[in-house]
Image (cartoon, rainbow, N blue to C red; front, side):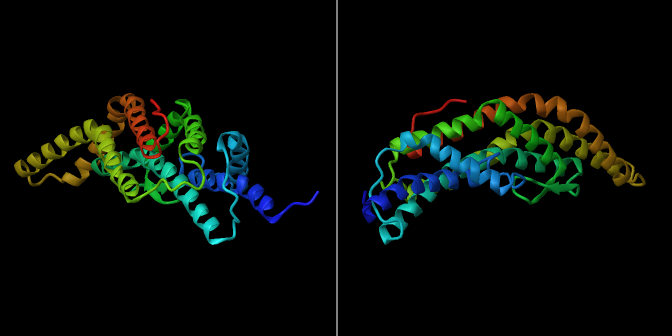
Length: 263
């Protein structure tokens, strides 16, 4: 049996283009894009998911992958995947921003450790919240919803179809405001209490200038923050993050035309 170059290109493209979309999404998506996850494991997950969603891919245009049109199609698939993964990454980084606000108010902004998700140094409070939020993401089935969204995207945005324009990229950038708004809602109760304590210490310092505010204020804010963190912040964290993730998945659905996903 003879195989023409067009047939060979179609077979290669049938697997390569879905792999690029899925691989780009997993590169920046929560959990899957964790730098602590070995590269071999991430490649295996990308290949396995590509094989799993192949029935939903549909017809792939028979384009030579090395041609100009094939490279444009590959870039399109990478951008679609990055769009999906970036919004989810912004959603989970809400916990990092909230933790930084709490750490600065507590006086623990100098206590940092490496974030395995990004490899950057973040306050220990951010790392604590990020660990809890990552576990919540898995408990809520966020990784399964991501796989479902990737599979549905091949139906609403077929391979080779130009679906991303300037408005889509602006929408992704504008969604960063949701990250900061969610972080404020998470950190606001504890930050408000710590702000009142700092204001009280300021009044006490004015009334008794001989008092060393640093020797009293720093241990007090750390103690109050450590006690109130599991009381004011952690109980509300699941509901806050569920709403943020629902908004993230709905935003992706609106941009790509996939069915809306709830939290």
